[in-house]
Length: 193
Image (cartoon, rainbow, N blue to C red; front, side, top):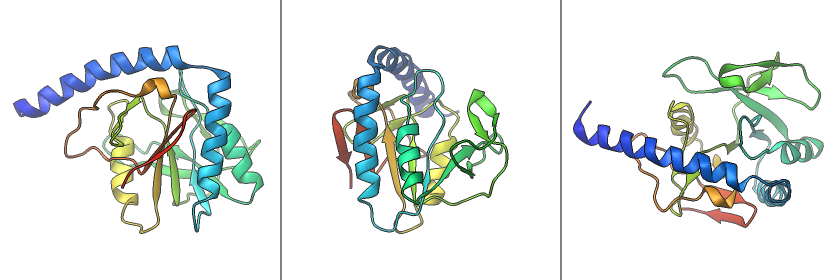
């Protein structure tokens, strides 16, 4: 691995340690409820939004399920990420409230069955983010590969979902990292061009 990539990898590891601690400290039911309100409002205002990818929270991630339920109740199809394997993009399987779930990779719940869908909008979990829309993930590259493919669709929107306390001064990035179109926290919505 070239020296520059090793330096970025080391900086990402350090940033993850800081961001994990910040996310744990920022966790709050009140903040989660407020953030879901902003997220639901933001997604409902997007034109031509018929399929939204959400996620089932793990560890100390902010929980998007209130938004997923509200969108589903409003007629939007919801899907969840399914890991295909190392080095591959995610697939998205349809989810409905109360559908059968199984444990997927990394302990995240995924639908037991259901159609695979291509989302118009993806609610993206993260460890940290910065004011430019850069996202710090867990390091597997699953979302970066997936967002790179989905970006080809003219109307696709990626929305990072986090607690405000997860903001970093700057996320270390390389050529593979995909910036988000927006970040939603309990403080509101930030959009990036």
